[in-house]
Length: 198
Image (cartoon, rainbow, N blue to C red; front, side):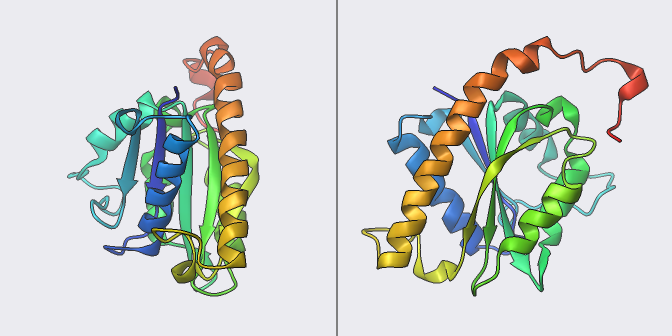
C-alpha cells in the first residue's frame, strides 16, 4: 500500500476542488492503492497557509509531516480567471525538496466551465523548480465540476468518462510511486552546491 497525499488547492471553504480530492481519495482506496489511514487530504480551503513568507506558518508543520511521509501526491488546482488559484501557488512556496523531491504527482485541473488546462500548464512551468516534484505526463482536467464526481452513481456520459479517466490516471500514479521509491532513496539531496533547481 502507498501513502498518498492529496492537496485540494482552493482557498474556498467547501470547494469543488475539495470534493474532487475526496472523490479521488476514495477511488485510490477502492482501487487498492492506499488505505484511509495511509492517505491524507490537505484542504487549503479549510486549513489555509498564511501568505508566504510568514512568521506564523499555520498548519504547515503538520502538512510537512504528511507530505514527507507520502510516496505520491495528487495536486488539485482550480482555475481562477485563467490561472492557478493563489492558494496552490502559495503552497509551493512552502514546499521544499525535503518533502517532495522526486515524488510522482498527478496534476488535476478543475473548472466550473470548460476550462481547467491553464493551472496544469502553470504548475508544470513553475511549480516544481525547488521542490523537485515529479509531475506525471498524464493529468486530469475536470470540467463542469459541479456536475461530475459527486456522491452516488455517475450522472451521465461526461461523468462516466471522467471517472474512468481518473481511474486510469490513478493507476499510473501508483505504478510511478512504486517505481520511484528506489530512485528517491538513491539520490543524494544533501549536496549544498545544488540546493535549488535551475
